[in-house]
Length: 526
Image (tube, rainbow, N blue to C red; front, top):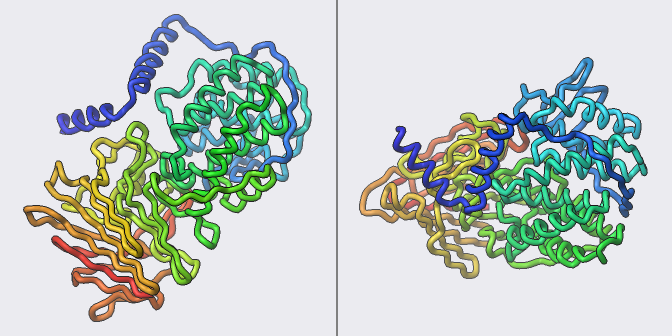
């Protein structure tokens, strides 16, 4: 067991970039040294600001506060007296949300109440822990700046605290994580640079945003972590930065061409991946009620005169097949960037199917980021519409955000109404290759799974159905709300699972488990 854990750790580290390893070591050693010297950051630094202008601000009311009752991620907490900004009984992500200050933009929020919450945070800042980490500083900084500028508030105490927080951020940029974390750092620094008219902040923001947008936005417009939810979040930030630069002329708007170029293709990808009913596939770490919806982002982009640029799905590994009867999104790509797969699931060749604009076969979703059994289950192969062999995962997920060995797509063939792909996730451990073929008809979909191996293995394919879809077994086929499903294997079992469309929210639903050995054909007749 110890040897296996060590091997798993070594494989995980092998995929990291050098800068991630270096910065983890550097930050760790620096923290120990600073503990000895009792180093503390100043929490107030003298500064001045320029109130910014915006054409309008997209409200994303996914968090709420009413009389010191805070609601995030479907969990509420009331504070009878002082707000405990370190409250952690609901998990770290909930604590993060408490300190993001997204709720400054809820409709009921009055100017005086918002200022009161900000000042309460500042008064307790010497004792705040999670809220002074770089990621919440980044999100809170943008929210404070937009709020202060909206009401043209010139409060020296708030500005001095905010500037000090940005100095903490500058000293703790998330190069050890990279990905969306570092990009959020960069977006926030751009806001701060404009707000404080600070050249040092601007230089760092420009470097991060330029480099990371080029790295993280793929050729087909997808965000490279391959989560539709995070794609929406990052697109939201890009549009916010366009709003900032368009309406506050500084540095000759030099960031605008890049931001516009990326927003156009990101908008195109998102609209391609969005179903006709406006929802997004719950692939990888994706949940509803977190990011602005596609419709909201379209409206925001229209207000900024940003046009969507539709490109064929390619580098992201996703494909979408649609006609008048169904929409199907399938994953025939790798799990994501090797050096930051924390939001990836062990779900190669997974798919979702909507029929007549309604969800039918779905991803099981996301309900938690906590390091627990539920998180492991939701990331595992068993929770996706793909094939598990000999009871092990295609990719070796562990912890809450780790992946050791991972499945790679080694063959991909595409023709009209046909896709075939193979992956090697089981090759080293089991000596097998999994091939999946999709054949698309006007009123039918055939999925063919082949296990290429010298040995016999126990393979299981699963189909997870949307809550309310009832599965009934007939003599030689399955009926689901009038849809017929035929299988070449008779080893069928109808089971229950928990569908998670939002954080901390699950709904009972049914799934179909199909056992087979070397080949399975499943046909869905619509």
